[in-house]
Length: 118
Image (cartoon, rainbow, N blue to C red):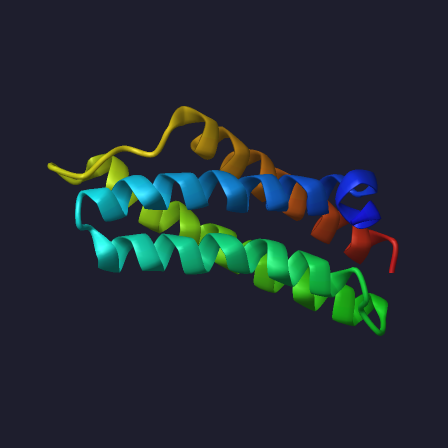
């Protein structure tokens, strides 16, 4: 797992996935199964796409995979916002929201830099 230690975006997306897994347990305790599955799927997909990008076949492939991760991050934002705004749903912990924003900013920077250097 050297990638997770050495690469900030890989490390951060793994951290986000683990944080979301904990939050999903709280959603499931409150029997909010559908939303729990949505947020878990989209949040863990971010890290999966980032890991896949690490072995991209070209710069264009790398950028494409990072854009997929960015789209999943946007979807995750939506599900977390629903939890935050919906009455009778637990709000995501501030740490989850903070890590999510860090991931979004980092992915945007990676995509812009990769495009500029191509």
